[in-house]
Length: 250
Image (tube, rainbow, N blue to C red; front, side, top):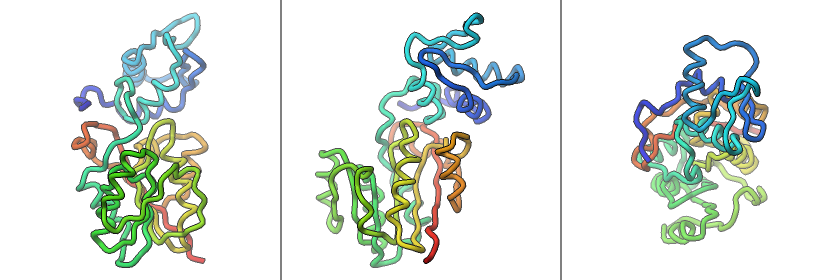
């Protein structure tokens, strides 16, 4: 599922797309006029996703609900019809970067809320962290139990109560329908005062203007776009960012 450069959506077009709205099978561009070049760029995306401009409706009309298609394009930064936006394993070099950004010291309690097959958990263990990992998929959770030193908490992290508090949280949550924003907001509750969270997120965190995304972005201490080929090893060119949240000390 590797996409060539031609299918990457320019950021200004993504900003426009995220400001418009879907109503059933119709997509309405945000109010105001776009300059010709930007309109063509946005129209190209909508057409590639199956939308046809309808003058009478003043909307791009899709033969199906357009929200998942538009959301998929915004989340991946590619105008391909979204496949499984759920799980992309974290490539080793990226896992190492996240763990370095987290500043894990030996003996620290570390949480990995959507551990997959353990790329981040392994890196956190390597630097001396005591790792607790959540993984909703049973087959992947079973693989995690093979990693010596990891405490595996099965089940859905989003249903978990923050009874235990952690020094550090490292995560690469699912992206679909802003799941990454929801996961990070939930994970923050698991941090000890003065603790730090580092997450890989969809690049949407950098430019989306909806209330949910904005509320999280305002809390972050640092965010940066990751290179477009960061997930090439996992077979996707999904566009991503790395974010840091430091919990206030008591």
